[in-house]
Length: 205
Picture 1 (cartoon, helix red, strand yellow):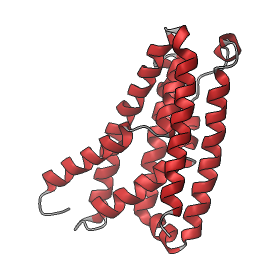
Picture 2 (cartoon, helix red, strand yellow; picture 1 turned 180 degrees about the horizontal axis):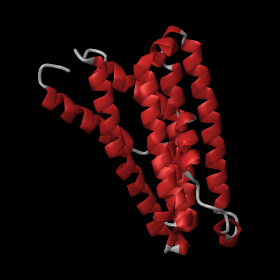
Picture 3 (cartoon, one colour; picture 1 turned 180 degrees about the vertical axis):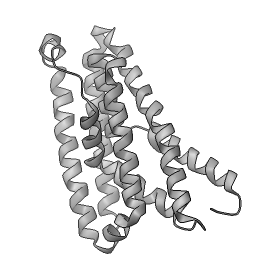
Picture 4 (spheres, one colour; picture 1 turned 120 degrees about the vertical axis):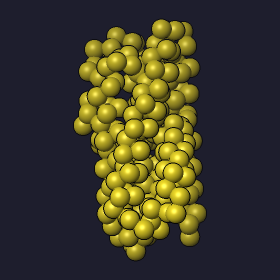
């Protein structure tokens, strides 16, 4: 790694915490799942989302980022597909506030595979991964060790960060009068995050 490995690991952990805990599509869906099904039942989804992101980070570090950067249109196509899917999720979240609770209370909580897929269509996951590899891994003297360490750090931090969002959502499920406001707020946050991703995607020239 760099000359000061301890400082590098601390920097990696700080980056992982900032990007994992900050609002994003998967965080918001985690909060919604927690509100619908309770925090405990969303653990498989959180685990899947964590595995999904770490696998994206590993793929990016293994050379996929080079391909994406070499062909800018690939990045834009992936971003547009992901944003379109997230807009659909935002619509579903907003619609939940307009239907009876019993309509979705009988649905099963999302599982591991749902969490994995959510990350692969999440523009934030790809942008964060490419930034992380570029800043913290590319210049490492031992590239492989740095990549493995970063994946391990992200796994350890991403899981509790997403689960915290589930707990926040679960706390609102006990306040039925606020659920409509919560749902609409989550949908709005998701739309805002998508607009931000699109601005970044097409602002690169």
